[in-house]
Length: 441
Image (cartoon, rainbow, N blue to C red; front, side, top):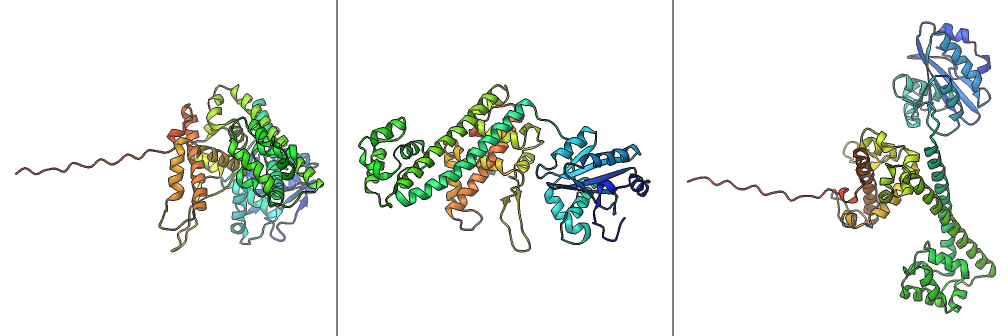
């Protein structure tokens, strides 16, 4: 093992394979850890406990083949090699593909495990590329890695991933443009958001058509147009309130440029809405072609199912509901010490995309008759003897419901049964009173 300047990197082109083999000739197996960045891969070969080669610097991707040839040479000398890398980012996909094609065992190591193990590794809490590569190799060597070969997605999953990426991009853009709309309306027509939500398609059509409350207030046909655009979902009373507020608004007068900007914002949001709906429509058509997934499209929604498949894969592949929750980052964690009793919270590990869409699913679910009463009781009752605000309890209730939805979905899919919202909340039966035995006299 190199002691002096142990983390100093050597160029991979200058590595002498015979000298490397001579140092580990008595070893039958080894692990090489890869710390991957955009332009450089740092590789560290671990022979065994406390026995490492000096890290190698590999240009990404131009010197990947050089690294591959070194590993092939070591393997030809009878050394069984494992390759370990972190799961973060996409810069390592090229090297993972090359190594998989050459029949190397590629393992995935959690980035959080690497961070937590850094100080244990050498007693110093510092992190840098050379050290991280050695830590990755050690974690894989002690069994903390998961087999992770490159597998090309099927045509079905490739289309699912494509539509999910488009849908999420549209959704993120929609949030930004709604923020612009909210700030503009707070200045020029603050009463509108108190009457109706600004994300309603009827409101967006109104703003894209007229561009300012002043012009809306001058048109007597606005209430009739609002009612027709809403297809009867918008009441006549609310349409009249919108028209009246446009006449009497306390907002600042709009310039010609403000009116044009408001029209562009509303038109852009309408286009984004159509994009999101187009993605969901294509996902629905794709999932309905499959006999299994078609049974869950109506109850779960095509968008949510697509996100689940794209981020964590098929729920049936998980051994338990707890493993599925852990993959979603919905497993519970606690931080307690001494007399301090920490509050349970979700770990938030894994892709944030799935938690965002599960939150949307929970928001839709609490509007159902089967869950409405449960959610109301949850966020209006106290727990643990601690006072909690209503907002705090509402978010807790939604998080709790997200966990219940995923556990119920896993159970339904494992059993091949349809998803039923009525089974989410277990009904509490009243305990039967035990009959009192009478003593005979």
